[in-house]
Length: 133
Image (cartoon, rainbow, N blue to C red):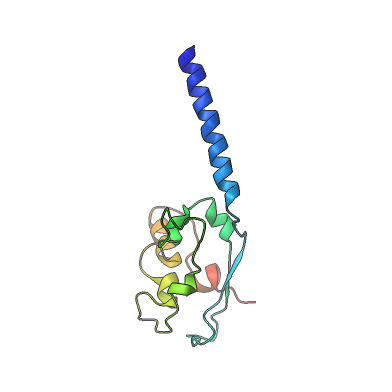
């Protein structure tokens, strides 16, 4: 009996702590991803991306994308363009590669990996991210 009460009390305390942590961060529902102003457009059909951040935030841990975050910086997220600003598409740390590299944490890399594991997530340029207006 005591063990059951202790287990329920621990579960309740954990739930309260998790709700407190979740409420401590303001997570935007949508984020518009636009290339830095001085970066050249690679193709005429490339548009800004209306990224469903909230949808992803409940499915992927923050550090899955915000990979430079640490316990000391958690909640003070660095915008992608602060690090990924290079105009060169071949630059492994550039703006283009942040979204299009072969593996996570890039969008295309993560979606491709999930697709190969049987997921139905979109991976096409104009069907997934750069939808024509």
